[in-house]
Structure formats: structure tokens, C-alpha cells
Image 1 (spheres, rainbow, N blue to C red):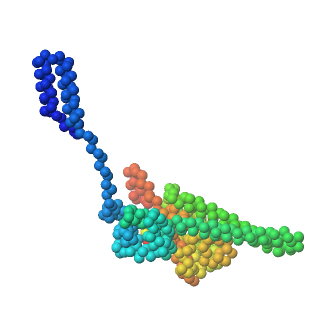
Image 2: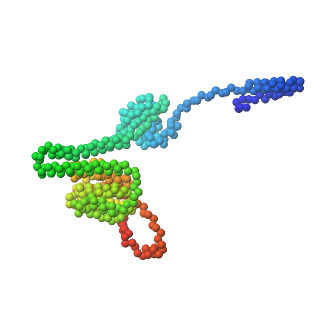
Length: 421
């Protein structure tokens, strides 16, 4: 029997006694059994309990303690308001707005008109607020009503997305401007030559053709640098795995950048032969860009020093220093920005695209390295690239006879390196 039904023991016992009595009086067995069955069945049906009605579910009222346990460890800043007073703020919100906001009027804590307007609404709503924590930041604040007295404010930081969008817009605008400048010169001089009807003398025509050639080469260099920057950015998360000997790479790339016209100004000092994990073409591009910049913007007849050594024991250091006019301190943080120039007129006249140091920066970041630029007005600029060394292969086992010989005679080809901090 189910647990919800009581068994009528006394009634069943009486029905059994009656069944026995009927048999003793000579009643037919079938009739006596039928009487017993009906009797016991009636007792069982009468003893059954009706099913209990389902219990009504009572909605428990949310408490601030239960909400605190839910939101405290969220990485998104969350604030709980109770009738526009800040009752709770999780760890991320306290770190962003300060621990003093708990207990404050939300309108005083947020201060921004767009955020304050959310507090007067009784429905889910959101607003974009600028300068909530610091100048220039952008936050999306969402308000969700919990019950008649509590509401939750959620803060989503959209500063990074806005910066990316702005950087993309600036890049497109700057690239368009840089491409339009040489194209305008090429088109203008070509139209002048075409409209001359043969009246332009040979020296003037040669001058125009020289300008066209120079602007076309500048345009070609700009497109090449844009493609290089795009490739580097696409591969910035892929760690290079090729073992490269930096000494011959630096020497070869530096000489290529100098060319036969400027090779006498190049001063190489390869004091180490470090091995790094890197991309051969990209590391060559780093050296070429740095040496080319130093030769372009350094003093006309002054040397450019290229040094390769070790720093801090586990870093290969490439340093390129010129003896030019130097760069003002306030301009140094902006040098790796795309198309940034300290002297736009001089840079364009020398064929610069404004992308060289931006490419260097991205390549160094891909190699998990570091780029440092120091300069002193009137004395020159020094650019240093540091790249982690590759781990050395474990030494192979040497037979005993050869080992004894090796102990007595050192290999004259072994590189002699000096650790420089």
C-alpha cells in the first residue's frame, strides 16, 4: 500500500471472521469468498486518502546578502541601487569608482547627466557615458530593474573598441592623404608635359620627368610599406621558430640599407654572435629601416654606428646611433605611430613614408622584444632593439679520447661574447 493510505486492520479481521462463519454454516465457498472480497475492497477504498493539493510556491524576496554573493567576483563592474542609493558594489565597481560610493546617492557617485537620467526610469535602459572615470574613456551603462526597490547598473568599457575604430579611421585618412600627394604631383607634371605641344625645352622636360620618377618611387615605397605593415600585423600572434644567427644578418642588412653611396658612413661593431628565434626577412627589415632612418636624418657626413652585443645575459641587443639634430623629448613617444613625422617636409623630401618605425615596433613585438628610443637635441638619436636569445642546443656526448683533446685545445672558431648590461 502507498504511504498515503491507512490499512483498516480491524475491519479486515471482522471480514475474515465472517468468512469463516459462513463456511461453518455451510454457505457455498464461492459466495463466502465473494462476500469477503467485496467487504475488504470496500474497507480499502474507504480508507484511502485523497491526494493533497499542491503547495503554492512562495517567491522569496531577494536580499542584499544573496545578491552580494552572486556579483562580488564578477569581472564586470556591477552596482545595486536601492531607491537610487548605492547599496552594493562588487569588487570591479569599487576598484573603478572607489569604495566610498557605497551608501552614496547614485546621482552624486556617477555625476554624468546621461547616467543620472537612467536612474529615473522604471524599465530596462542603457546609455553611453564619456569621461566617467578618466578623460576620454567611454562606458555603456545598462540599468535592469530587479524588483520595486532594487535595480542593477552594469558598466561595460567600450574605450578599446572606440580607440580601434578611431585608429582605423585615422589610418585610412592618413594613407589616403599620403597616396594622394605623390599622385597629384605625377598627374600634374604629366599633364604639363602633354599640354606643352613640344614647346617645353629638354632641360625642363628632364626636370619634370625626374620629379615624376621620384614621386613614383615614393608611391611605390609607400605601397610596399603598407603591405609590409599589414603582413606584420596579421602575423603578430605567431611566435617565430627559426633559429637565426644575428651577426651576419645585421651586417648584411646594414650594408644593403647603406648602399654603395653611403657605405663609408656605416660603422659596424659586431661584438657578439647571438642566436635568436626569429623571422629572417622581418629582422632584416628592422635593421634596414633603422639604418636607413639614421643615414637619412643624421648629419650629412657623420657616421652611423651599428652595434650588436648582449644585454642582461639573455637578450641580443641591436643599437643604431646617428649624430644628427636629435628629437625633442615630447615627440619621442609618438615616433612609432603610423605616418608620424617630426619634420614632414624634410621626411617627404628624403623619400620617407612615415611607416618605418611603426613596422619596426610591430616586428619587435612579434619577436617578444623591446624597442627603446633615446635622443638628445644637437647630439643625435639612438634606437635600441632587444630580442630574447634562443635556447642553446644541449651538447652532444663526446668520446673520452676526443674529450681529453678538447680539454687541452680550445676551438679558435668559438665566438667570444661579452655580456653588457
